[in-house]
Image 1 (tube, protein in one colour):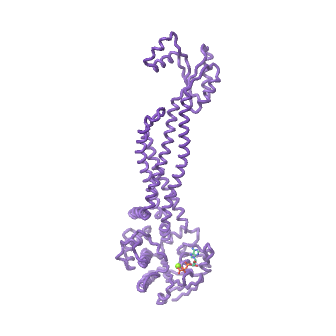
Image 2 (image 1 turned 60 degrees about the horizontal axis):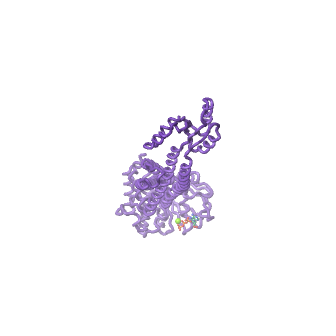
Image 3 (image 1 turned 45 degrees about the vertical axis):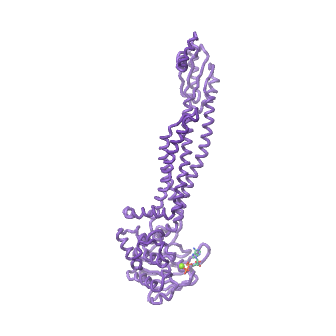
Length: 222
Length: 296
Ligand SMILES: Nc1ncnc2c1ncn2[C@@H]1O[C@H](COP(=O)(O)OP(=O)(O)OP(=O)(O)O)[C@@H](O)[C@H]1O
Ligand SMILES: [Mg+2]
């Protein structure tokens, strides 16, 4: 599903966000990426989404190489991913329902299915009563949940969530983590970053990636 | 195609939302584009008027060639050939003395009695030329050098004055027209690109969700086309009203320039500027999108 061989990422200004690493992540695996702020968690997710290209090494996601001459294919594989961005990236001025549906409009799904999927996932994140609210009027935590609903509604094969619990109270945070991790049952790979390590103490199975200043420590617990 | 139809309602709402989210700048774009297109129309119509006047004036141009009397038929033919050879002369017709008399009789009308005081026909036969207006100075010069030509008459003085005025209008027209055309192009594409630029995060989000390019671009391109097209349409409307007023006001103010019928020109201008605007809207939206989506 994801294969990294001697990959490293430096930003144009010289910041070495990810030091050379190797890993592979399989279908249906649950991956937690932890580490302090600035350790490179988001940078790793950006690689997976094709928002950044590796400075060196080979990085493959869903069978496609993440590199600058492969943007067409990267655009294709993005349709099979469910990204939750640290800064949400909701579309202002549109309703909750519209935001969630938007992630599916260009897929091969009939309109009523798109709407059903959207409503189901919005209800699942506890916002069923705010379908028609514009996202501009939502609280921070609510926006976060809309972005999660958008990511999971389209039933991706790979969910990538950057700090999905960052702004939530413990109860909501656990609810969201349970929601996201439940997708591994249907063979979806789920990658979650968080610096709230106490929240993931209850998870015993999965790949745990500890990041520190661009260094990666990978542990697979089965 | 089915995906397009499926999303028809969405696209429609998106176009509205994009407009409303950037309401102030969208409205300002509409207003400034309307004014730019109006100025463009003014310029083109000024240019059109000077051209039309130029055409009308060149119809007024005359050259008459008188020749020494008593030419033998051989010399007469030679003269005719010599004149025809001159660059820019398209043809000539011979006006007999009697025809010249008749013409003058018509011109004088009631006063034609004066002519009766002559015992002999006071008029000489001459050649009347049809010629290219631009070459007329050279033609006159060469005619004067032609053998057996006694006198060349033209209405150069009047024409020169008119031409000076028109040349002046034309130079202004070209300078203004050129700068207006260029600025129309630049400003239109700039405004449309700015609009797209302010939506770059939106576009980027759609890209990150894997949306295909056509899906992302469609509302923006349509928006750009609608804004430029609508502006051009409105400016055409204003221009039509304005030019109607203008030609009414113009009638009779400048004696020697004929009033022109602007209505058909106005319509042509309206339609073509709107078409140009639509094209410009499309090109500049596409261009703006290209710049915005350069990022990964
Ligand atoms: N576009 C960029 N250009 C230059 N440096 C960057 C860029 N993005 C991130 N960095 C740097 O790369 C390092 C890793 O950043 P990253 O965003 O991956 O951290 P993070 O682990 O996600 O942090 P946080 O927990 O605060 O979200 C940081 O030092 C950051 O300043
Ligand atoms: Mg981060």
